[in-house]
Image 1 (cartoon, rainbow, N blue to C red):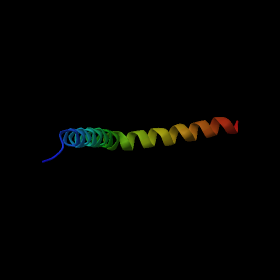
Image 2 (image 1 turned 90 degrees about the horizontal axis):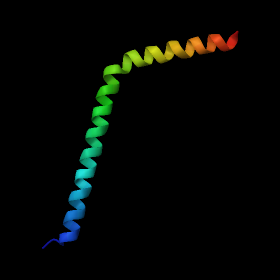
Image 3 (image 1 turned 90 degrees about the vertical axis):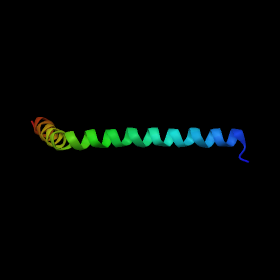
Image 4 (image 1 turned 60 degrees about the vertical axis):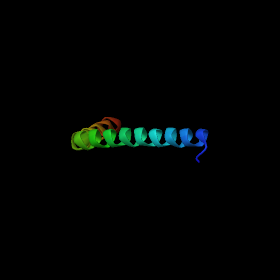
Length: 55
């Protein structure tokens, strides 16, 4: 028989890992959706900042 406390702990761990994995997946999908726009925007912004610094 499995110890009750051990079973509950492993189950909590399993749920925590699944929740974390889902959060990472959601964030990954959202970033991939916005990825191109954000990358272009940040690149332009960095370029603009560097140009302003050169003045």
